[in-house]
Length: 127
Image (tube, rainbow, N blue to C red; front, side):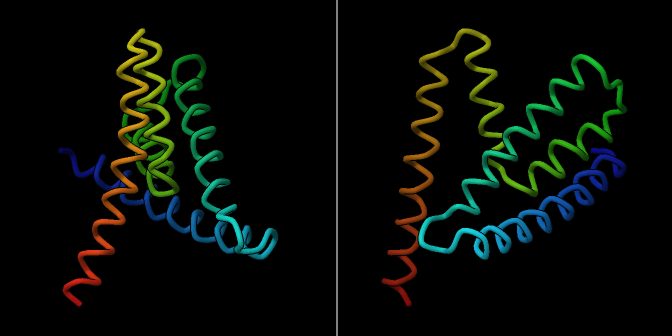
């Protein structure tokens, strides 16, 4: 792994994480905390952003690998991993693997929520 790519991911991740934090705070102030509007907004805008980047890479932007990694893995990944989840699901659909895409989407959501619940119960049980 090249140090340049690692630095690109690290810098982009820092920017994306700070953006996520700020959007979450602003959303809470604007819309209240009764519903996770911030997370929803972050996931939707992050998915849009990674889609825009991938589309631009394919059609208009001839960027070096470090710049591509900075924007997608770094910024989008730091902002929300849901954008990567969305891109992976899209690639499966685009390849005609509809059943695999559906299974991936359902499994990702169900298993992730199940893992979270299991971890909370485990920590409560031992703590």
